[in-house]
Image (cartoon, rainbow, N blue to C red; front, top):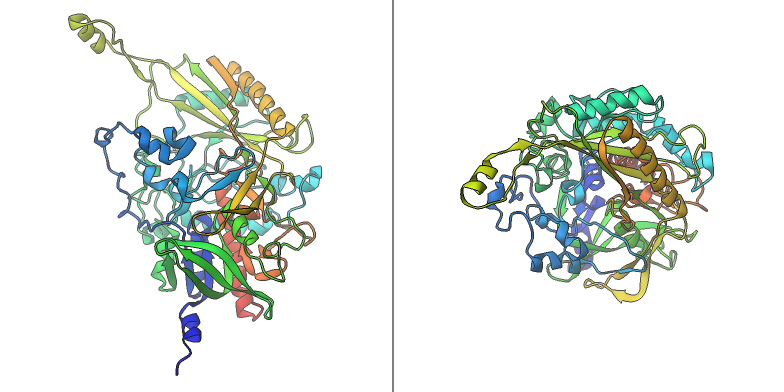
Length: 569
């Protein structure tokens, strides 16, 4: 008689399992499948196929029933952020009831539960880190030292940039290393003016093109992916049918699928990782099927955790055993602690009275960028680390009056003129990881899948407040020197997490007593489990983090394959 348990386990066994199909999960799948590993990719949300499942990608503005606004009853389905979600992208946002959490302190957690994850929603800004970032914690003594440096990631930055397609200039700045760039988008006349005034007035500050994951000059590798040139539509978050910007759906997942080595399983809510006490390693992943509510188990030699930072923390915390009663690999009790994010609270706007003879044509899916200039080489302010700045100028709007009736109204409607240029800036500050900023599992509350609810307990610090104050002062001065008027610098007061860049909780480090992961992103105490999404970050720097996630993931995946081939995993 056949042993049905053994047969079932064999049918559910793979070389590798990747939890999550977003930016980092897609890269893990691509690298592992290319190297010949039969790989199961688990995604808790629905399947979204490139081009096929972008229902609003080619809709005109007048085709939206409510002009892009969600009706009130639909807004309520998305909770507090419902009023800000556009009708054209609502299908990519998670509804409020999908995953209950306990907010011990306010935290705005953005989730994208579908194949491709938040790679369908990201801002596509891609900047490399430098050693000034990797060495930051060691230099000022806050957080712990990174176990890697720029030289460890440089070749992997190049690897992912060439495949993804990154538009940018070669700027030669030590705090922002150059990469493998395609042709950048143009700066507007106002951005060039601001760039010039910064050069004239500051030696330590630079305005550059915002490096972004858009194919502006398709190379052979992009054509092989089936991607085309960015069309400058600036409708990216609807899903790009041209594959003009990088997403897991348009790039890494189809590439992995073509190898014949990838099995994609959507509607798979990961409950926990299975640890075998006798073997002393993880052997598989337990999931709850979102469609039938049943529990299933899948097995593999290596497991990559890429569920997005906070969910990766949740999964590991819920992966308990006799060996790890407090969560997988959590001997030091630090799992879920030192959660961090970026500080976007500082904002500024203004008006430019210059260039009345010019206006912009077409659309630019990127913007300009001022790399960090505070505390780069020495401590020079009353706060630690620093901030980068995003800067943009909006095209001159058509102005006309709606006053009057009859002939007067008709005359006013047709008496049109162009308004001024409007400029805006936003900070992206480095938030210092502290132990009290943490997530943990609730002792009794569970979500609809029977998984403990995540308790979010994170708050701003005095360092963040001081950084916002400095940003407003410095940007006001820079705007004044550029001759901008109607300047309004402000603190938005937004809660932690509003930037969509949550990080930490499973940080990398040298010492198992102070970190969870080693320099190859392996759990110190369970070497066949790798964590390469935002959860692995030891500190946040000021750059948009996605490019670093991709590089770290590609590096770890190739190391994992080498270790398998050596018989070490």
